[in-house]
Image (cartoon, rainbow, N blue to C red; front, top):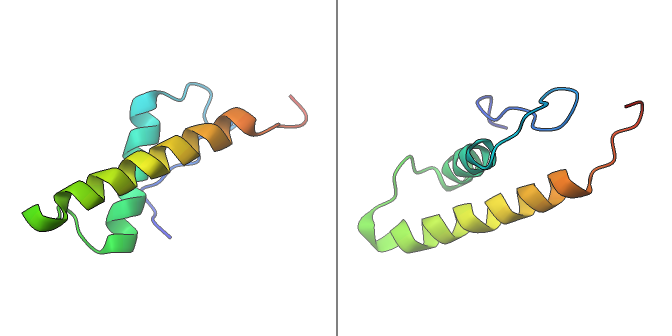
Length: 69
């Protein structure tokens, strides 16, 4: 979907920071919304979406069980 979003789970990424998760969430919302930077009237909704995707991503990464490690 978006080539700039990197895999954030082991073994592809050992040290994932909150900034990495936020950057992936931002890239995802940018891609699906079609906005690099939303207009002022969409800014709050855009940021809320980034926040929600960031939380869901963190939850997913915390819950994944990687076998063979």
